Length: 96
Image: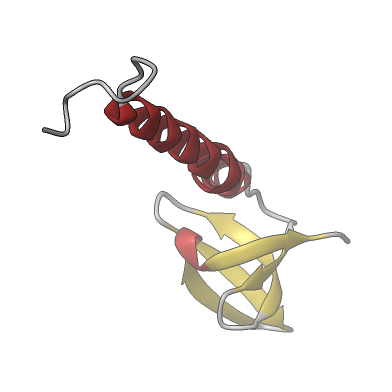
């Protein structure tokens, strides 16, 4: 019975389908796309880390990178004090 044409010959199922596509499109442009862009920017920032960069870790430590390895980095947080941090633990790169 739902598939019968309504008055005026329009199918209400088509109208509902159009609204579903519009809502999905809005969700994509307002939620999914910005999140993907942010993830790409973060991945690029992590790839670009080099010795001498000042960083902030997710744990709140601020330090200077002394050595970059495959999965981790060495960070000097005080004179003669270095810690090893996973690259994914870097929150952001700070300006000097």
